[in-house]
Image 1 (cartoon, rainbow, N blue to C red):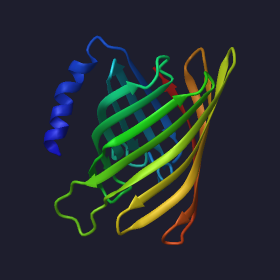
Image 2 (image 1 turned 30 degrees about the vertical axis):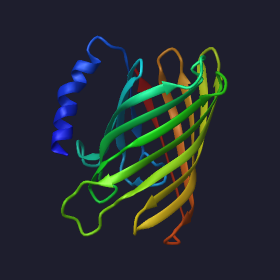
Image 3 (image 1 turned 120 degrees about the vertical axis):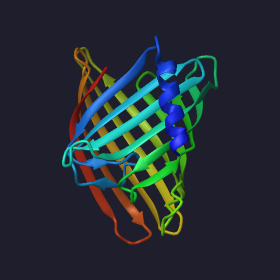
Length: 227
């Protein structure tokens, strides 16, 4: 795990040198993790990046708590390849692998292989099928957290002169081996001010099935900015 982190820190600056990257940072009133169905009742700051050149992509995500400023909640780093499946590049398949740390999941550290299919049906509509595994790398733990998560997502955008409205709906399933199975849906409504790339959002998630029979509704809202 430490070797993976050191290699990432060493090679990431070389990959990003003289390249264009997409960054965003946002404040959330309470933290919702990358699955969308698990949360933490702490205000959080989330920063993400995405870099791509030809087939190669690198992406990262880091969140820290404002309740305990500077304390990490969740972070991950992924590198991989994206392949165009048609001439217009409307359909693509991405294969990546990375690592993650998640305080929500008992301070677990994980390997995280991921597979993503995207279909840009039009300028306004995108369909995604995403799945990733999480493999617990802790050597000493009473309950390893291994499993997989997958979702089908639909994005619809409404561009206007001054703002853009974006709605994303996901149906999601998560399996944690010998611990829990969860199925649910999430929805994000986002409004972006085109002139400043500042955006406002509301996230909601509802787990309509949990193997421990404890269904849950979670939500947050916040503000962010793209760079």
